[in-house]
Length: 610
Ligand code: ATP
Ligand code: MG
Image (cartoon, rainbow, N blue to C red):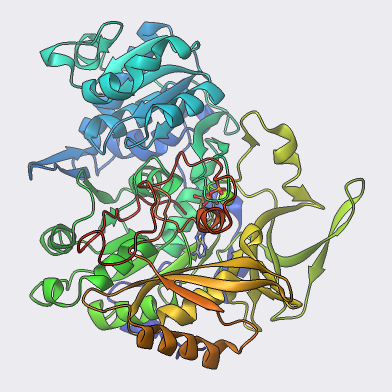
């Protein structure tokens, strides 16, 4: 199924685009130039993310610009300027120094989206500690797992989170030396320190020590969509890619009001929810609260958000909520919308056009890539359903793995429209430098100078990339390789369907056949007639070999906390197989038939991972 291309004319854009013409931007780009656009530490002392994100602006003409506008759950608003952020992060760096924490030690963060999270992340990087933000809704076991793999020595958290989740496993966290409580004023749990006291006692003057661009800065855990989450290590040099890609793929300009809805517990919420906007001197909105349709539209309206970066699952929730909450809003400040995390089905792109007068711009990347690799750009035509084209500085190929374990290789596919694995030429600045504790797994990601993504895609004749599915999720049916995305896109194009998750189930004749789980718009009943119609709708567009043999209506689909459909869990449940690591599962999954569990099942907006 194809949707009409959304044509762009750079002349019509309200702001001159950072990337005006795709081909010339690619040809003219070098990473050295992107590096040169950064400040670097004074006296050639290297490159440090926190210097680029904070001190650079605090020492310049924009010191009093708002860096972070924090919207509390209770509707309080706190503005933090670059100057204030510099002082707070200097103090935090000094707190670590005073505690005797060494460069390279790992500081874990377990906090909601509160100012202390941002201060601790940037302050720790000033001290050259390695930051690992964890999503605050994790239970004790995922916390223990991550802190153990990461040998965390410092944990910054709140009293409530500590008491509920960490205190009980404290004796299992052998490496943990210091627990800093951000809201300890009314009493501290035993064995913890009051961060406010420490900040007040620390010196407000700090100078970042020489930082090698290859020094580790961050550990991010993957979403755990396909298995156990892996800890990807990123270095300070990554900021070169964060800033360049945010300019190109998010079109960030210094006077933007920018809102990234992702939580820093996932890489999107750090690369584009802390580092890139601040390094570009942009004011960013941080909302402490979880997804809420009314709240989200009111933030867009009242904060005059100009650039908005969100996720497909959130967009589908807004679509599901209908027009009513939106039509009375003045969203005229909005000029660019982007999405990442899982396939953005074509109907969602088109919905953006209807709802905001702007298509949603899909982009693709991974925890491992650290930054956006493939994107739809503000001044380029959008082909709904396509992830777009590689950002300047990134070379991609569609490859097939060849050879054997002894002599692994890849064959690069030159012709367009051939399905294969998406590969990236290794060596970009934000490429992960290791998986914690998994050197072999890391090594196996690279072949012949290519980083292999385990995502399947095809490239059309004009270089646009189309996502087919993860290698793990591909369905082999009667000699066809079927990417779940293709089937899900068609199902979501039916007016009754909000979202779809597609898996392969064993079949004695075909090997596997396609089975689909769908959720419906409110008020639509899962009648036999509707199911028949859906099967016909899919068969007509996909052909009998690819269309789902069976379609089941579910109240909701199992998702990771970052908002991705967990197809492996659908499959494990279907086949009665072991369920594997569920540490990132959003809500316990129970495929309750619609109607049986009330009107609306609990569902987050996805906290945003690529
Ligand atoms: P794990 O590696 O633990 O299984 P994960 O791959 O979901 O989890 P992330 O690094 O957060 O962890 O997500 C990256 C993956 O998300 C990509 O490899 C891809 O499968 C999917 N993804 C991201 N953006 C897009 C997109 N625009 N379209 C389709 N898929 C996307
Ligand atoms: Mg992955």
